[in-house]
Image (cartoon, rainbow over all chains, first blue to last red):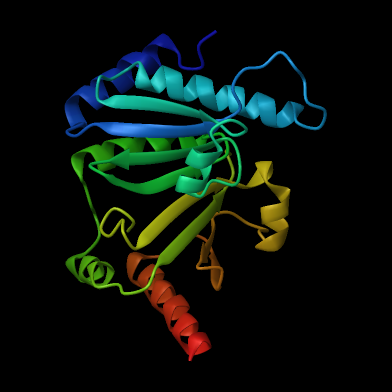
Length: 152
Length: 67
């Protein structure tokens, strides 16, 4: 059964159609479907499968959204390249940059954030003040921002 | 912020309930909780100017430590 209702799908399809400019790639790090149950990892497996489904459904709604799926046990080089330590994780990229990532299943409020990020990234929409943008552009050190959220 | 300078800034949204070890490490008791460079942490949605000030504070601390 799809996670997105037909109404959600229609709305999102229209939103992407209207607002997206550049292509966006979702690099999803997950556990590929397997019939072998690994003890202690049932919950992780379920979250991974949920994340897979959300991303698959989203990428089906626009030609501009591309999905690349990596398995955390097999694609270890890719995990290292992206600095991924937990699954499911999704890295959003557009135009060669990969500024945003979601660790865990992007459900509830996080789903809206994901949609907003896809659209903003695609259209290069920045709502920050000129001053803030100047400070950020002039950074000489790396900044790593983690925001903890819950789905409700 | 990460979009303005993706070479320098990395932004991560973490679903807290799935990763209790991170909740413990960063003492997450309320959401949203923001952590910058493992140095500065604050709760709640803060205005842009204040957010930026926290980023600068984290970077200053880092500079001081490497001196």
